[in-house]
Amino acid sequence: MKGKIHSDQISLVIRLAWEDRTTFEEIKTRTGFAEHEVIDIMRRELKPSSFAMWRKRVAGRVTKHRKLLERRLKSPGRTFNESDEDDVDADEPKSKDPS
Image 1 (cartoon, helix red, strand yellow):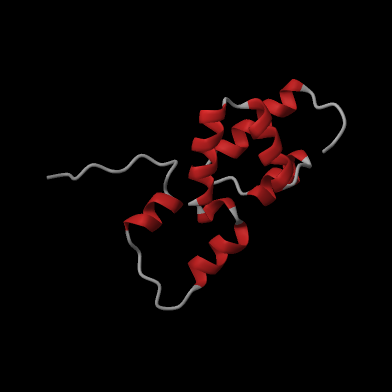
Image 2 (cartoon, helix red, strand yellow; image 1 turned 180 degrees about the horizontal axis):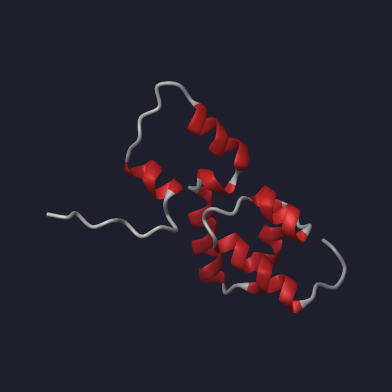
């Protein structure tokens, strides 16, 4: 872990970590913190229940890992289902049925 971290940088890491579409690779590019460092920051800064919820959420997200996402999107014979929609479009509101 880096030396003393400024509170603005901690806030940025937390915000990026909660975003479904921001990969850990992107977080490293923008903040300099690797995945394990982000996890350490989240563990230290969040309430235990919030950290547990975040870890559960991140563990099920292909979109948090660029290589996994690219592999999933390129796989031949891939069918789209509701679990994919949760991974890829989690930040977008679901459209309402026009009928």
